[in-house]
Structure formats: structure tokens, C-alpha cells
Length: 163
Image (cartoon, rainbow, N blue to C red; front, side):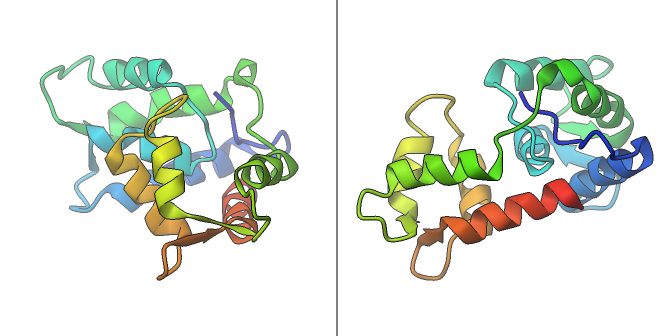
């Protein structure tokens, strides 16, 4: 439930970040994304919605076409922008909080976690990611050996906040 838009970020910059995130998943370039990717898109914006938030967002996005499996940019943009700009949602985890969370899971203090361990935790406990959402995340953060070097991943996430 965290808005990633920094206080100094202009509305234009925020709109560009939202558009860029949407475009990453608009594979056909027809201003459509699969509704199952909304959670991944929103998280790519450094937001941390609950599953309840995501269901509400998708429901609102599909208000005019409830049976559609794809979300149009015109429906996505106002709902997502409202969520991003809703200052009552608060900020996401800081880099330090993320580092501490990863370190708690890294019992051996190796500086990395195995993808399989993260999958077990992130798809079965707390606010669970779907298998698809986890695969999207792990593709972005793991190396060829299936390791997530969390300092690098935190830096990657932080770039998204600043860009």
C-alpha cells in the first residue's frame, strides 16, 4: 500500500512512470495488458498493494467491460494514478528496511538468497504472490544460478523509485 511517487516528483513525471510501467506489459502495443499482470505492473511502480487493493483496482478498471480479460490504458491510467497519488497510502519500504528484511532471511549471511527459498516464502506466506507474479519478479532479480543478491536487487528497485 505504498505510493512510490516522491514528494518532489511532478505529476508529469509520475504519469510517465505509470505509462512506462504499463508499456512494459503491453506486448501487442494496442494499449492493452492482461488483467493478471496488473499486480506486477503496480509493483513495478514500487507500490505494495494488498490483494484486496488489487482486486478493487482491477474491478474499477473493468467497470465498463467486466468480462474483458485485458485492461485498456484508458481504464488503467486514472485508477493507477489515483492509487499512486493517494498520499494516505504512505511510502514503501526504505532501502534499509528492505535490506533488513532480506538479512533476516539470509541465515548464513551470504548476501544472497536462493530463488527456491524466496518462492516458498513469497507464494505461501503473508501477502502471497501468485506463481506468475513470483516468476516475473525472480526473472528480474535472480542470476543464472538461481541466486538473488539482495543488495543488487534493492539497488534495482531503488532505481525505479528515482527514475
